[in-house]
Image (cartoon, rainbow, N blue to C red; front, side):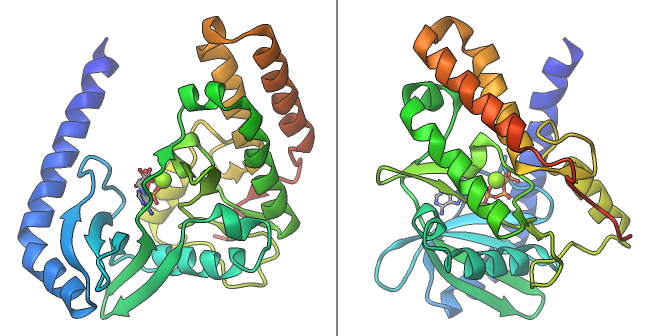
Length: 261
Ligand SMILES: Nc1ncnc2c1ncn2[C@@H]1O[C@H](COP(=O)(O)OP(=O)(O)OP(=O)(O)O)[C@@H](O)[C@H]1O
Ligand SMILES: [Mg+2]
């Protein structure tokens, strides 16, 4: 009972804190984007702002809608930008990405500009009505695996269905297991960053500092089977179980773990 109340309350305070932050910095933010040709900037879902990452919608010079992520934090958006640069080179993945428009770095600010998607963010209802499209989720992770990449925050909220295609986004914490490329771990000498990682992908990972994207998909499929049990036909259950099993098989025992502190 207590937690049922605590969540909306903490949500409410977060939204107030975010609104105050936005109002205090509104002029600065609007001027910043205006300099780069973006207008009609509106905060996107003040309830969702967290970890020092601010979300906006806006319009570019051609009148096209854009989605903007803004931060003063060091690695996060630089990493996400690098991820787009790498992923776009993959023939399969390029059609499963939201269109990347621009990366801006000015003083302490970093902004990532994406095309505004009118798609729907996936949820369990969408999943059971689109069982035939679920294979794409696994295929996306297969490609990440081939490239030694781990998304680390695979959950339904980070997929969007747009133009008949499932797209994956939110690459702020994507990591390259080979450590060779530019996708890097955040600075773990900073205590707050360690807490961020413990929170990253929570409930979708095997342990606090281990991530495996197949494990996350496995949790998603298992969750649908449990939560939607009464709405599922036998055939749908069979398919979901099969996908759940496939992800279980593909889970890696060498799950990505933080090694260097
Ligand atoms: N290009 C886009 N067009 C429209 N909406 C978007 C776009 N990108 C993100 N969103 C919306 O914003 C939400 C948050 O985006 P994103 O996951 O990239 O940021 P985040 O702050 O890292 O989120 P979280 O940590 O909560 O997963 C998404 O769930 C989606 O609803
Ligand atoms: Mg997200």
